[in-house]
Length: 309
Image (cartoon, rainbow, N blue to C red; front, side, top):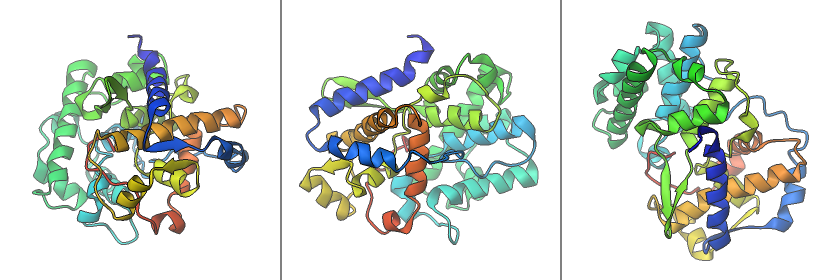
């Protein structure tokens, strides 16, 4: 498999799912007017940027890779301690950023030896929380890959890649960034965090590689939520009721896969409707930032306990 084919694999699989979907559909009549809202957007900031510590390119690369390795747990957010005024992700990012500012970024050796108490202390959570052991495992995997493949250097993956999609494909081969579901008889790759890590490294100036525009949307639970609230994604009433009742969706269930695939496919169609003015990752950023508004925060969103997002 050529590494640059990863975004194409994602978009093709998501289109295939949506051609068969039973729980989620795209309202294609809503696409053109909705795309018009983004025609004059300036999505300069990635969805998970904004907490990058000072310290040069290696520190910026360390932050982008480490934070994207643990950029999951949205299904657990109601059960964690959030900082005042912070979302779940922002709580975790603030802890890592403060640790990097006070003591420097983790070395690859430190990551390879990461245990739950250390990451729990960094992000201000109980080490016994189930999410924390998953964070520690993801960071150990990052450390092992950096040591084995890149001499322990965080910029190593970017230096070895020929393009942004190739960098995303490299991360997709790490267990820390695993993100493939199954729908009927086909594997459906999403690789939300692998693609986002590559995009964040590009936006941070660490990996100024070509091909950022070829990435897909970063399929999580917030972008489908925004598209649902705004009438672009239409859900089966039974799925609507489950989300409104704040029921957890099983990871890999048809409903959860269709929500993620629907978001990726809808963003592809929205990008086409802008006549190339915006690419999928830029529309994703605009939707993610839109989702921080109170209108969207006040409504129940899909929740799933998974390491994918």
